[in-house]
Length: 149
Length: 179
Image 1: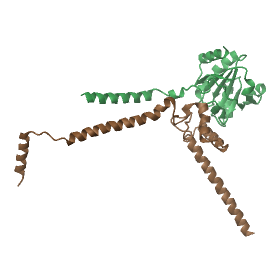
Image 2 (image 1 turned 90 degrees about the horizontal axis):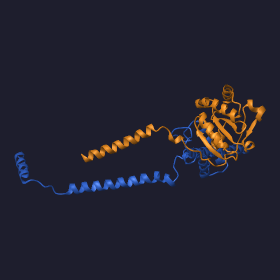
Image 3 (image 1 turned 180 degrees about the vertical axis):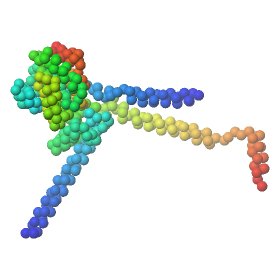
Image 4 (image 1 turned 135 degrees about the vertical axis):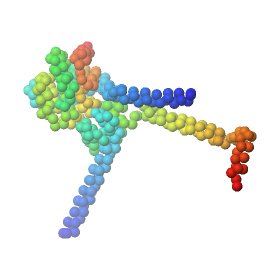
């Protein structure tokens, strides 16, 4: 009798832990998707970070759609269909938006190339023999002789 | 000297870009609706009590298609909504035979009483309902309040006004709907 009661308690605890873990996982997914969406009434805030009422409602919609089995892609598409590309914090990789993705890479490559040119020039100039006047050399020799004991 | 000029030009260009960014306001709010030219989403919403006798307890968009519609989203805390409410009422009285106006209180959860006071204050006689969980707002891609959607008789969106309506814009868009 006691053994079966313990077993029941154990099973109930396991079920509870499972349900809690599922809820935590769901909340994490809602947060992850919310971070990719811009809050419509805020300035530079994502749906995940904002406390605005519409952001709260949008998080509810995300949760509801996840529970219905929709994928992240489908949920993002749902909001994109209503708000356009504006709603996505990461601009889509197409059309004019491509510039946002390509330009930093181009700038980084150009910067590295420029740096390489400067470093090469500097190395070349530091490695070259100095042209020194014979009179100056003589003056340095004399100074060294004076200072040596 | 030449190098100095180049450095100064780069600094001036960056400074100019920074100043432009600060002074340009919020152009990202002036976004055309993604629904323009498309069929607007259907919705049902509870109406404020004062309209029950004439329009019933629930408003369903589908039941009113066939006639151009002006759908105005507002909130009880929104100052521009206070300014545009008398404009809407005045033009509703002028156009009510040809166009249906509908008001939707949104982004205002649990503020039904404040909404009633708003309607009372401006004696709005066109139907106004409650979007308590802002779902209709999301369906319409609402950025804030006020926003007004001008819907053709076939249910497609003709124009969306972000922000306060002036009598001129409202009249112009109403005439465009009826053309």
